[in-house]
Image 1 (tube, rainbow, N blue to C red):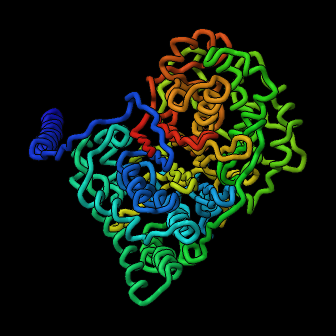
Image 2 (cartoon, helix red, strand yellow):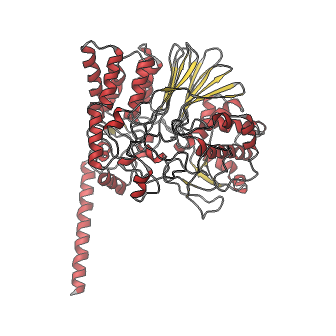
Image 3 (cartoon, rainbow, N blue to C red):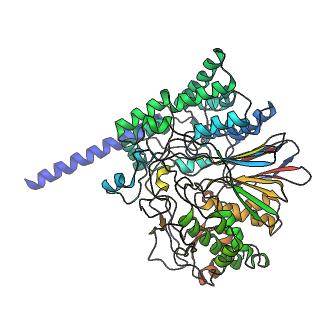
Length: 630
């Protein structure tokens, strides 16, 4: 009898499985994805473009086209940057969101000055370490509504419009609205970021139904397909609502400034703010009306560091903009200029400078409203010289020791990802944290006919519940906080996390020379330093410098929760791995092979203006990054 019951039970289970499989197969058969013609740019050789009037480079060809059209319609660099940012939210929306973070630098050619716009939001008033610890968390979890910061992107947009823009929001948002309504093909980077297994799609449907509604409108059974037509009607409607607010203000005789204020108020004090607050109340989130209405970004003095004939500008210490100057100043006190490019000796030397700088970043850099960052000491020659003496003949087995600056700094914590591998073992790498839709960041750089320039590194991916019915993604940037109260980047109400996205400008002999940025998390500064050294030490042209193979240290704790690391871990693009892995392994590195032009190694977009006024723009072959110059 028992055997009969078991057989019946097994039969029922088998029947249920067959029904599910049949339903799945029928769904896939009936579904006909609308595949659009498109030639992917990822992994293809690209050529730098030159001109005398204007230049644009962004993360997708649609964003570049939008920015170019704005410039040709006599818009400013700020106007074009806003248009590109909004189009990136559509065509690279799994990596960048206008409700997310947007670290920004602006160069005013008339005054010769660079300014930084604060492009990351603050933690809600209810967000504190005790809240997460009480729920049993050792770090801030992704996929949670509690991981959402106050959105900064809309404040950046209205700040740029007010200070250096000329065109109405309706004109700037028009390209994004049109593409979101009419659709575009899912390009190679989007497909890689969204290529979820069936159980991940099901998990998203169960855990984040509002996100699933946006990214899987036809159901979780349907896999993402390369070049399938994507539309985002809710995002288009949200942007149109903001356009209508501006138009209504103008119809009442409002000034340009008053119309911009009306747009901002609609987001932070009006209906969108109410939707955010209602959603957080319903889902156990932390954002309140006061958090949104009281939010301010604003302009700040950028970080400024002189390195020989070059002057580096970056965003404040709420970003990782101190990284490149720290690395380069350490290298000034080494023999880096005398070793062969991308030789094992070069890779080792630069990697150790990177890891020393990362330790200082993680010990001293944080929100300057909460943390006193000893920039004068960190950027001094004496400090750089002392740090260069910490460079050793073998790989660091774990994070390098931070420099000692009495009276400053916090603790550093992280989890080791790999403890049982030997040098040379191939390690299967996963994105830190749990599954989610998308990852990465994007980038844009613009120069207008008046010589003004803007660099923005927009980011935030839908790894937390999206605001229902709006297409608005508020990201999960709280995951870059730490739950250790002694950490320099410890979570506190009203504090900004020290985020990885940042933007960079460089002057040469006192004049604007270079604007560039990249996605890549902790790889961002590593990629930009390698490109800069390629140009300055090895005299590569801009496109050669951007396309050259890269290496990526993962020896330090990740900036993202759960803050894991691989001791002595060093990822190498294929060409470098084949040339240098054996020697690097002999130095103690756990060398990990990655593909040629791997997107995890950054996707740099750069604009250079030479002493004769000639402008060159270059796009990285690692993503859909697209450059234009005229």
